Length: 439
Ligand code: GUN
Ligand code: ZN
Image (cartoon, rainbow, N blue to C red):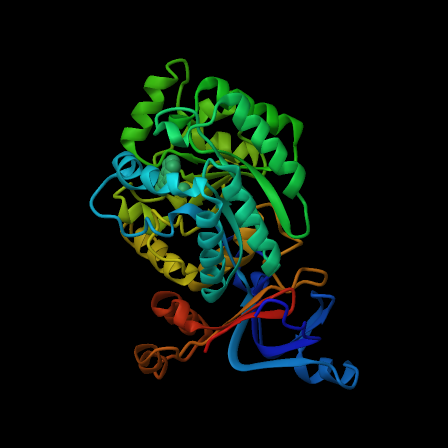
């Protein structure tokens, strides 16, 4: 599908968000046009509205994709996943640190081989597109070749990706370790080649405090200072044993978050995976810095890590930006619909609720804001890149059966998020061109 032609317009049941429905109210936040048209120019949105009016203004011979009766939304954004873990998913019976040692660190050693990394990157990006995900923030392995492979495949498809090679210099097999200097040099070389090249950008990626020495976190901080607008991604407060290890390794630090603060890694466009067991002080530090806490519910349930506290993030002063991600391969599904379903269930265990409007906002504009990429992706405003997902709410017999009793958009979206997965994705477009169509 690579290289298919761009459409001039896309017709369908359009749904997008202008704001967070929790903050602005559904009336201000949710936009739905039953027979809508997106008018595109050079792969970006030029205008959006009722098809009837906009069709009249299109030139003769315009290429129009008609996706009625399907829903058309901005493409899903996955702000935390691991490219070298497509063959780690569903590894049995371990908590985080044991899972890393027994499965993940064994598998990631294979990614020293550029061919292995290229094949996995191809698979991963195709699977994301099949699942309606058009943008992602991705961890590669410690090997620079793994990041080369992912960026090359991302460029070939025209996806918007944020990615980096992990920096890790201790507490893992020798074959997976760099050093503070090597991690710094390799990261700089990758930045020079890939940062802000087309739709690609680099994320400084110290894996987590357990596998980075103080000297390496200092090197990551030096990179962060050299590139003040660049993404940073790491893991924070996922598991009790991990937290105890960090407390032992950094005895001077008042808590886990303060380790990253010490090295200048807590700031805007810093993405912290998991954030399950944070104290009020740590939430406040993330909120004040404008950093993002990335919830990974299928992973947290699978590894028995704990339940993300969305309400505490929202109530923190100032509130913490929150993203929602798969965390492949601790996570068990590539589908952001399944990820939203898991998040709903995590919140239900605390007697809290996630409305489908809140959920689809998170998968699109919310995750764009968590990544600091609002204005580029995640909504249907003029000049935004025309990445979109086409969703079939009757994709399976069970969904079609349930849909017969659905009367409102709210109910329809809830069925889609609770029962939908890759089978519900009828097509995915990147910059206004079809990158995937369901057979
Ligand atoms: N913490 C450090 N590395 C990882 C990883 O690969 N997956 C998860 N879930 N947590 C981590
Ligand atoms: Zn992760």
